[in-house]
Image (cartoon, rainbow, N blue to C red; front, side):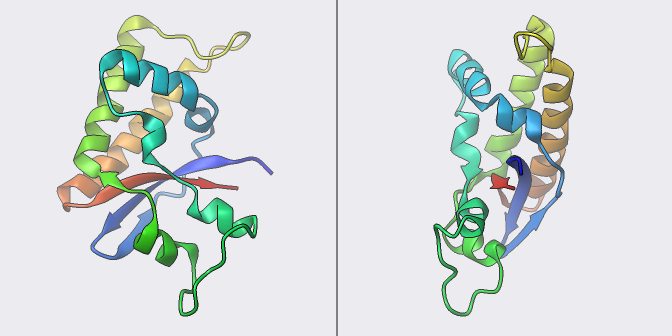
Amino acid sequence: MSIVYWSNALIGETVSSDSEDLYALYKHTKKLDALCSELGLQAISSFVDNTDLLVNLEQLDMPAGMECTDDLMAAQGTWVDARLASDVLEQLREYIEAKEVRFGLVNNARGDVMEELVLCNRFARAAAEQGGKFNLAMVM
């Protein structure tokens, strides 16, 4: 089983996900964080929530009355303002495209990273339009 990110939105008390596996963003989080640092942006890793992963690994118990990890994530997960997330994702995408940043030593995963940044940003922008929050949930 591999770990990936999913884009999530929190609108009011409701969590929604695009359920798209974002493996390239997960795999290259450290490099993306380094690029964020270069650009003076909030780190991508600050968007990451591990609630679902911890519950599935039985390292975190579901409280009584909660039926799914989305409920727990809504109550105590890691969230950032969706407008901020969208801005960071867009600036990263623009920089990676302009500077032709390479991802990987053997195979260049820039195309995958760019595609996933676009997907994420689309979801974050939609959440921002509703005044919501955003995270990248670690799922396996």
